[in-house]
Image (cartoon, rainbow, N blue to C red; front, side, top):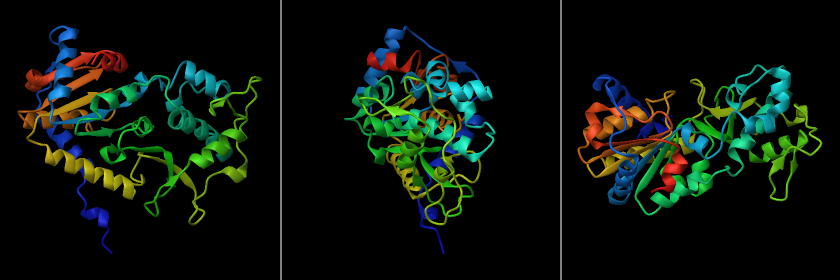
Length: 328
């Protein structure tokens, strides 16, 4: 039987093709900031106001600016016991640690999910971004899996989260192409470790600091359909489940790009690094080159640059994303 998703436009595959085309197209010479920072911010503000459409491309730097950092004080506050026993030094690498058993592994993942997916970020950077684009024709593509766009109030029909969602489980072998909401499980697993809720209903470490690094065996998540083992819905290999919602978002992204390809489009890249540039950064470069009415903007801390071929239609701002957005 033909899968209906196979007949839908695939914005993800199209982006990869655009990214690979950019690798072949651009010569490798980069342009960095030109003009004063005040001039560049003023120009970005004008482009936001004047554009026919805005395509937001977001990476880890956006969430880091919002305070969802994976190391330092947040890590020490919520994962101090894992750091002491296993030598783990940050949240990201902890996700790959070979824990001794499922009870410990899922205790880690309950915290990993909760403190990045189900709490309000320390800084309202995503909400500020929404105020800047809410009255525009916008779409956001992101490699982030914390779903802070949705939490901040962005329209779900205008979001494409390409790499998964901390809030979803899938079967280990993606046997059915389905995903499963995990919030209820996360709440139970956090309580089972000894975390307590504060006056705002947010889990905190108890005052005596006594929490456990294991959950009961009966809390190990299993597929509600057939009892199979579950894992996170995060793109790590070809077992990643691209469920119906993922395909709808991919098709919506493709449709948005095609409907605006010759208009005055602002490709607004926020916090995208070098891990997966072929998904957001390189396609944005390629689409800017192809559309003489388009402008590319890159706001990133320490990594704001563009190819010289599109430098005259680019705005590069090196700085904290949240601080820059407050100036717009």
